[in-house]
Length: 276
Length: 187
View 1 (cartoon, rainbow over the protein chains, first blue to last red):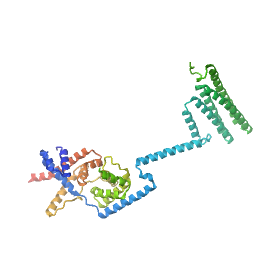
View 2 (cartoon, rainbow over the protein chains, first blue to last red):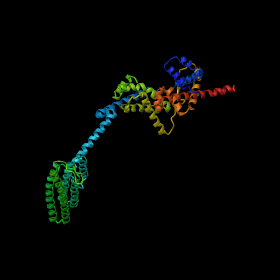
View 3 (tube, rainbow over the protein chains, first blue to last red):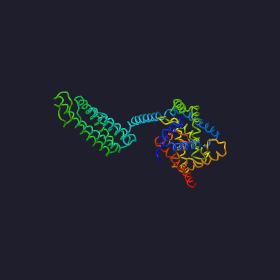
View 4 (cartoon, rainbow over the protein chains, first blue to last red):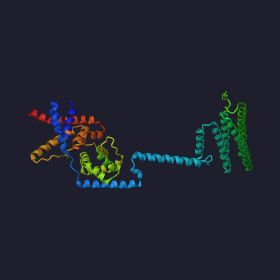
């Protein structure tokens, strides 16, 4: 069978457009008879048709379609988003979801601020603290934040003991201890300028005195309440924290004296190369 | 697509009743015949045609021209509904059957009888084509769809449809010649 796709296509187009079919056929003398046979077939096929629809049904279906459209129009009035193109609606929904997540996240973060260890929102509170540390790139500011978070741990432990949650309070003490140790390590590993060293030294003196008084008072009240074990845990924390404060003070003092000898410049952490 | 069609479709997308009615009137006959040719049952064809236009109202806001004619989009809805129905009924799609009638009017009873015999032979030959060839022949010559519309419905390139159309017509021609040649040899 020869491929007459193209000549047939031209003939059918000539028939559709009511152009001169003979002219097209003259271009294919060798295939003329076969082409005519194929065209006759196409005409015979085209003469076959399905019976027309019942006019009453045609009208009924038209009315039902228009009623459905009216119903849909009504629904659009109640929901203006439905009238917008689908991509715009998707974008609107995505925006609304992002806003809801943002608002929800901020609300949860704010609500978690007062939470205590063991509360459902406490994880969010720690997450927010970690995020703040991760996004603070200035060494001095990071160290100050760690000092602030150590204060928060101590305040939490106090509230836990006050609420009668003694076991949680003891765990809180351990967390406070860890926070102070972390602060101590950060001081040792950070390059701080003179001003930051002075600020931190003052803050450290003030915090150490306040924490010492708080912990003594706490241990005393726990012992008076007959909770010797918890009182002992607080006393251990006090002793451990005191050592950490002392280490940090020494570190800051050594940098302070170096600054008096070498002028006003950034103080490297111990072990870091000295600036020339 | 003409600008007037564009404007009509935009109005229809806003669910303007006049625009929707205009689209319905333009496409109803074609869709009904397309469906009837494949279902061979008036009540079923009516039910499915109605569904096509209800679906049109439901999803016209999703229609984007992008080179696809509105009629192709509408035939695609009909095609998908037909495929669903075939699947539910657990049977294969059928294209042409003896229920199709000859649209040409003949006054002479002898001519009517002759054409009736020719029609029967033609339909018998069509049944021997592959299902895809039957589909192309039926869409092209009975539903009077353009090659591009058939290509869009069958998810093929226009060139493939052209060549399928030629192969189908050539096979039909051969099938119709066969018995005649046998009769000539007998004579």
